[in-house]
Length: 392
Ligand code: CMC
Image (cartoon, rainbow, N blue to C red):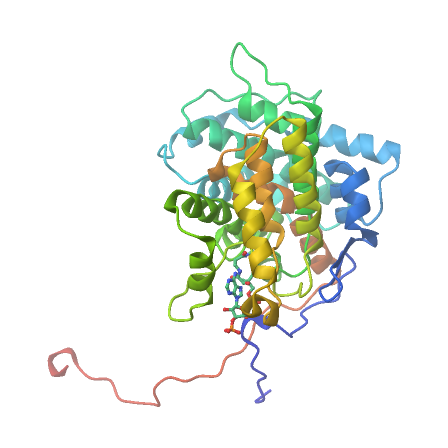
């Protein structure tokens, strides 16, 4: 026990055995429960993907219907929660609202604070969380723009219901076009799980103390917020907008990212595991073109993104470090195309990642894993004697 292996950032430390998601970073392979991401992205709905990731198998029709009904049943928020939204100042970041509200919501449904990783208790908690996160997210946006909340509509699909809660107005129901609904589903599916990333390992760390699902997931939301993780999707759009507004050549930004005297990075580039390409970025890039065409839109930020990708792919700095566009590089452009406001991008990632967090939380409990407790090498002062205040 006196011997400690240093591995800051845990780049080569395995912390668990997992049956959920397979990533081969050298070959750009991602599979959920064995199914290639390309097939899931093309053929599954987000709700089917959630069921697959959480329970391990593609649901049959009856299981899927039961799951859908549970999601519809749990979508409304307890009426006592309404005034908590208005307690946040208007400029509050939706990620702050989301993490706070998750813990708050759990207090209104006492059963969900119990720790069950199997059976009805788990099924109910998981469905409640997956459904309520969507309502909380949409309402935090409505609150931030000073608009009335829209009640969930149990007859809509998961994605259409979210868009309705975001964009319907009192006298004008928002009905998304199939292209918009499919684009949102694709975004959520591509974010549904990604093995032991920063937020998922945070969820597991919190869960390892046997904390309940809601509090474990709320901490995952906080971990996701940072710009090196989920916050990158909003940071990419900010970066592309800055490049466009500056009128400077793209090379200026590429050189700045290569310059080690500052900590400027090209957002949406690089990945701890993918060292060839990120299959999610390839799917998103293709879909961005299709969605823009279907919606008869164009986006000048896409041209900047393409130029950035093309130039970095030929640049020795990026080649030698194996830095490629990651999932966050094109996802913001897709969300922009379907009208999601930038302050919601990372919240959208959180909604998508929910099944992954839930599945990892459950797996940790099923395997009865040991509490997470990394070690350190102490580099501080050796023992010294206390100095009274008047002598300092
Ligand atoms: N721009 C410029 N240089 C970079 C970048 C970048 N985006 N990413 C990594 N590098 C450099 C890094 O400085 C290091 O250089 P050197 O070896 O000379 O010191 C080298 O590439 C290796 O990178 P690293 O920092 O050891 O990589 P990491 O595995 O610790 O970090 C990362 C991975 C994703 C945090 C990092 O690449 C990054 O900060 N990218 C930008 C933020 C981003 O896009 N995050 C989204 C990640 S994907 C999905 C998600 O988790 O949300």
